[in-house]
Length: 332
Image (cartoon, rainbow, N blue to C red; front, side):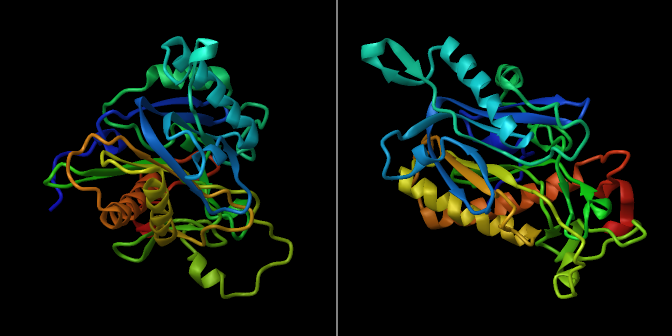
């Protein structure tokens, strides 16, 4: 059975901290997930146009097992610079992979960025200073959601053109079992399609009707002739699933793969040619119980889909991009 204690989100996994920096003048931002004691890391990239950093390192056949942070950011490939600041923060605290002959520790900091350059002034992006400040602000308290960090410039529902899209953001969710196993997710939702609540099958946010007052339902639009002059543009949903289970790198990779099932349940369509959909997995190994990868992966998919729905529901929107909450009951 799962417990019903109030959820902090990803930080329900002991040893994980989360910090945001939001550049509200555009808006855009970055979200840093810290594992200061190290965590087994993995990744699964399904989108056709990813902006990523250090993902090859996470291949199970490669040597380094543990990572010290994951960085999610806006700003497209420019936003990958935020990880440089996180590395500086960790190096100052002597956290990283030890290279004895050089007398240094090298922080292992993979990351991924989403495309939000169409929101505001594209010259304003998350940079190394943003990454440093997000790492410094990281805590193990409840994770702030909505239009913050990597979700500050996130939007959904662009299949019929950006003028009919909506604002989304960043969401998180956790599942805590009675035996102490924790599986949690955090995600910045920037999708070409709609956010669907798997519990009801209803659209939460996505492509609006031509008058902008309702939802068109992308599942219907996908079966209609596509306008030739409409280009959905670049998109990407990026996130992390974490558990306190003890997993190998290969097992963590399988959990990241299974978490994409939750992404595909809650976002329609997903994994498109111009998406960069990417999910990282972290395993801290503090739970003493057996590590059932099948159960952990299934729970990771559930946590991911719940976090995606929360990312849509907690956004407050922008003047030119309404959110699910702003459009009210008509979108529920």
